[in-house]
Length: 210
Image (cartoon, rainbow, N blue to C red; front, side):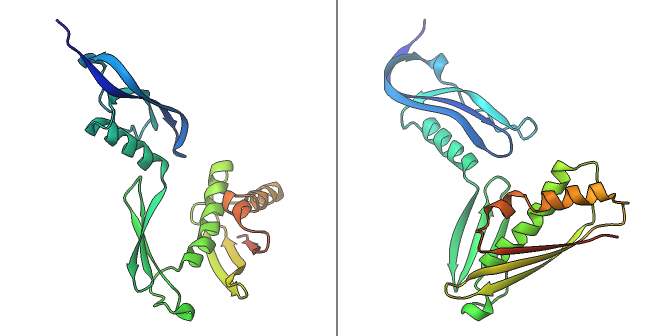
């Protein structure tokens, strides 16, 4: 014998694929529907190997399961959470891994300067993005051990990053052909962070070959 319940239900279709946590499709409907207990499907855990979560989930609307699922989807889509700790310091937590970093205002702007400043992170992100993108786009060229030295130059009126200077020293795992060098320089100057920065922020990237 099957028992049916008239409940206010929530129907959610989800397909989330890949590290970019892109929500491909989601429908969120609610209404009265006769449902059996067999319809109440519990959440499958995120699979870190396949990096895929998909399926149809039906829960009583505002039930603990439905609220948990909505919060779970929100967590997947969000990148980080930043908490202001006082005294011009923040803690930023990467929601996927739980790792965290702290920031300070710099000493020339009322801060302690004991951590990266927010603009330090922007400049550092460009260097990290350059070598990461090279490793993704040109995996046949081994750049393990490459070192980036980053200089951030601030300007005023308004206060902002005026220039980021990055010296990239490539490891001696080459040799690097002229074609390799041209390819790596092109990748460095078209990485996502480079493309995101405002045109008024000058980017100077120096390539130091072994």
